[in-house]
Length: 82
Image (cartoon, rainbow, N blue to C red; front, side):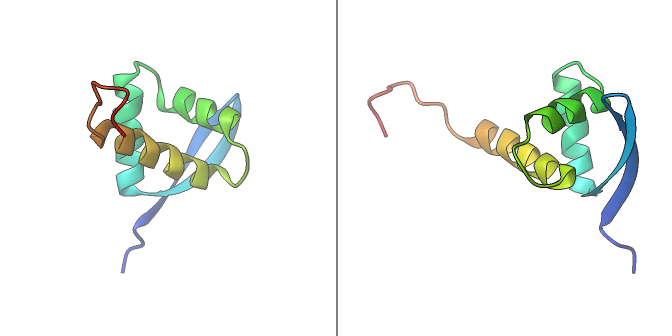
């Protein structure tokens, strides 16, 4: 049985590293980087430089989750509404 986790090499801040993520997260990263007109390496570099703790794979998963969760939330027009 094939593992759902895919390990890929990527250059981050001029250094080659490997990141293990599920295919859905790789696809989410590709979509986000395309929408932001940046390379996958640039996006991973941004995530890496902003992470507070934990490993890079976890930071990427949290970033992708937060990105799509934020997009899925309805926009409020009245700031007084909770």
